[in-house]
Length: 133
Image (cartoon, rainbow, N blue to C red; front, top):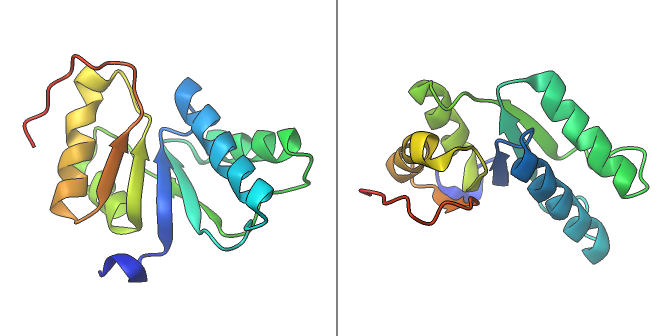
């Protein structure tokens, strides 16, 4: 699928983790601040739909909104399941990878993104982790 035809511009993967929650809140905050709450289709991704829904609810609460835009999607994805990584990568132009520890779980995400023509930005505090891709 062409990048401009993908349903989401970006996906925050690992959104229910410590870093992922912060990143999801900041994406939402930027949209609200810029007045573009419905123009940037984005999603949160992770293993638990319930946890991801709570992340979105907390972000909305912190921003003083009843909910976030209906364009914020939820993608169920597990870093240990390559097929689910591929499905996630196919739906986004950019994956913001917040899954850790990066030295164990970073490479499968990069691999899925490379193989599906998706940009990947790794949000981790582990600069010593080398990648082969």
